[in-house]
Amino acid sequence: IGIVTSPTGAAVRDIINIMERRHPGMSWVLAPAAVQGEAAPQEVAQAIARLNRYRAVDVIIVGRGGGSLEELWAFNTEVVARAIVASVIPVISAVGHETDVTISDYVADLRAPTPSAAAELAVPVLLDLQSQVTQLRIRLQNAMGALIERKRQCLVGIANKGPLKDPFWRIDQNRQRLDNLQIRLQEGMTRFVIDKNGILNLLAAKLDLLSPLAILGRGYSLTYDAEGLLLRSASQVELHDQIRIRLGEGNVRCEVLEKGI
View 1 (tube, rainbow, N blue to C red):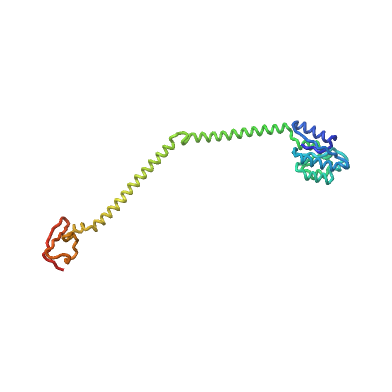
View 2: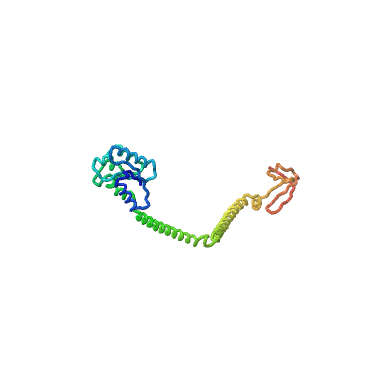
């Protein structure tokens, strides 16, 4: 806590007494300044600026005890108002009694009716903080316990199924998949062979219809000359040439005795 007030006034004693009662471990820094008279405005503004440069306080209490309007006038001046507004550290204005209102009260981050009230606003009660910490610790422990229990239940569920429960679970699964694939392959090959046999039989039937041997079987014959060339015309042979005739069953050799066109 930063305090800007007279080092000899009642305000500083009241603030320190309240702080020590509420939080004995709270540290404070006094930036002394005159709080009335011609030098007061400039000293108060400089004290606020020093605490901002010091940067070791969390909040600044600026004020003094009660007095007449003239005695409180330093806190109605522009230089003090601008110093409060320029402060990067929050400022509590605590000037005079509850009924006293100054410009500092309007420009400060918070107004306290008295210096003692400012100390009460700025300093939390140590026992309250300890109670809050205890409650937060209990809530944290309960939350962590619940989280650990959920994770434990999840882990138990994982351990009771799949490969953690049975190391050969994956092998059995793959074996079953392999069996299914083998059955599907056999069925596919069977269908393939049946289909191909049907196609082969159809092609064989067509081929048989086109085969010269099938034609011979119906009473036709093929005639070859002595060199084995197929004869298609009588002009290809001469009288007394030797020819071979292929029948549906067997061959015969003949001699050309007559030919005609």
